Amino acid sequence: MVVGRAGRTILVPQDESALEALLDAGVTVDSMCHNGLCGICQTGVLSGEVEHRDSFLTDEQHTVNEYMTLCVSHSARGADIVLDL
Figure (cartoon, rainbow, N blue to C red):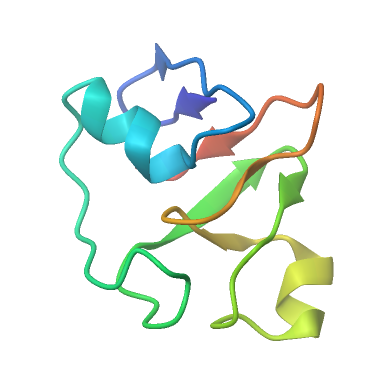
């Protein structure tokens, strides 16, 4: 995963959310529910395929893939994503 504005690359294990990896790397991200319900951690996706595991975004939003909820979602297996952070 690449933090777009900072240009940092952060590895995200498949058993970890993007939010966990970002926080572990010292990146400050607003979050609240940690269950994919509230949308506080919703972040823009500049490129890449996301494995969506949230209930906040609609099916259409999942398909368009312009946003993701960092607390429960991560890049699709083998894919790199660039976040608008």
